[in-house]
Length: 127
Image (tube, rainbow, N blue to C red; front, top):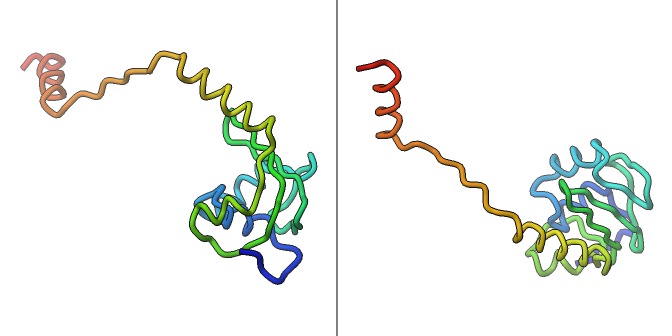
């Protein structure tokens, strides 16, 4: 899990910790200001160390984590979850947002089938 290095690039760590599917997505998030270290914007090559506090923004979700271990190898999810610890406030916010989403009605979007599209075209063009 932990490499011999004391520091690691933030984009590699975010990818290894499974916050982003690719390193490119991690770099884009960092460049767009959705990843903060100790409240400050950073660059993708910024090195992190054990004990750093990160804030990640995923849409409405705000995840506050502490780096527990470093790894530049992407492994299974249970191993990746041992690389960080999420704060209790962050977990409480996730539960609150999930409860709010459950209370909202589902948005139903109708997508016409091929047969429906043909009937719509017949109606539009009068055939």
